[in-house]
Image (tube, rainbow, N blue to C red; front, side):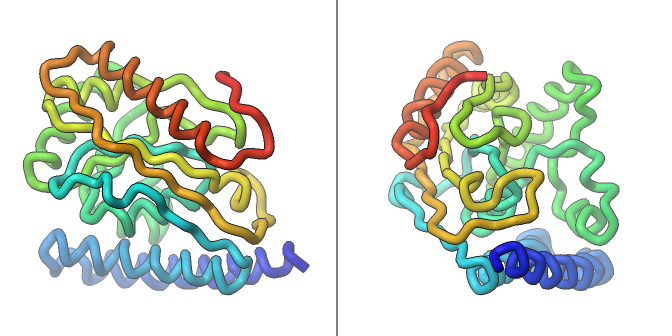
Length: 244
């Protein structure tokens, strides 16, 4: 029964993504950036999360909203599934997400997403990508736009922590903007590379901002990785956390 409900979710998810992606590509450029972000991304993601709750019984609860600073900063989030890529768009708006540039080639979704000025890097050229991240990340932050990154670099299975990539710490060291960490257990309900969704509550934890001004990239990375591990340990998990 749950696999059927999951397929019903994907049917609605696909239809609205194609429709809204085409609509956003055709008309989104007519709107100012902030209105464009709301029109293309926030409305779409809110519908997808609502549809997920209706069809699969997956909902969420957030703790730590009081920790969010009033001004945009650098967000480092746990990456376990597709769920958080949707949810984060509703929490940090407008935002620039660090992505691999190939995502912009996806029909409808990628075309619409490209109008929102993500930081799209070529992962096969890490040095050039890091310079691009610092340059464009600074521009976005100075413009009042959140910069969102997945520091583990790829989706991780529940119970395992990946090695922190240096990009977020390098951007923080170069700009002095604080870092907010976001942990969650979405992989228990929307597993990566799997069709079936498991009903229940996804728990999200938001850390207090980590100050970065005057600190080296290495120091920031160590502090962020340690705080991230502690944050993830507060979440319910079916298995113990082990480093990759």
